[in-house]
Length: 331
Image (cartoon, rainbow, N blue to C red; front, side, top):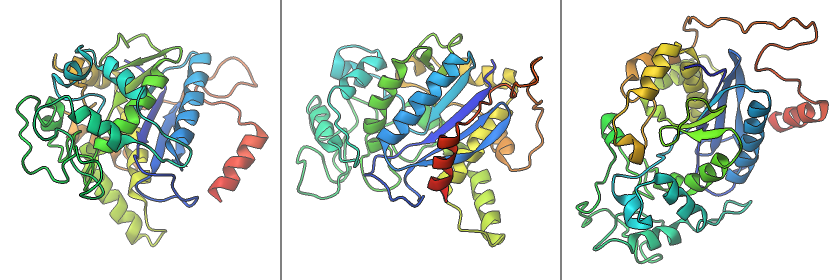
């Protein structure tokens, strides 16, 4: 199991972020051809989707392989998709959401309205809960109290395997991931439609140029805490946790041996075909070990082609206007 590019995306359900990089926004970490790129900050989901679409097309055109991961659930607990779409196929639910979720350049969206509609498929309160105030969206409970997860379990098998504190039904109050799910799955549905893209573990993904997968930065929490503490001690600018965790997790994934990555992606339960699975859920210690900055790895530099004008595999020329735009944005 080999990939030459590893991407980790920290998603957000919030409105358009400020020009100055900040936490609780969208960040993208990448290692390509064994080389780490500086994490990228995106002010909106639409900005991030456009950039990801371009990256995917470049990987496919160059006949490379990329593992593109996102930090929100790719599926819901068993039975949820069938209750909404009449099918156990999670991609049908992605399509259902893509047809209803609205988002614009300012990040204004209708996720609470769609959550209300989803709650209407179930008896009693929930399963979605949590909102900005107690008055709006009356079909969404403000608190979880009184919701009984009898028709549908509150959490997936992989959530319980990693002891995740939040479920995909929690829409507000930290730590929360429900909003990211509703705003992220439509994006994944559109990216999946691009040539050469498949989804792990729902599709036949082994021969695809680009594989989309789910991750959870909490898996490498010890490494993140240690790294951010060291950055604070060094007297440098206060670290942005989201930026550092996509950097560390992308590095950890890129340092895995092919056999280790194969074990992570193939050794998953049958339930994952409907609920999805968190990559590396059973390998917390190994990924935390590899995420430590300065960790020695078995990575070898990519082979050079017999061409004095060729860059290493996985590396492309950056047009001058694009490079200048990136410099301006980062400055």
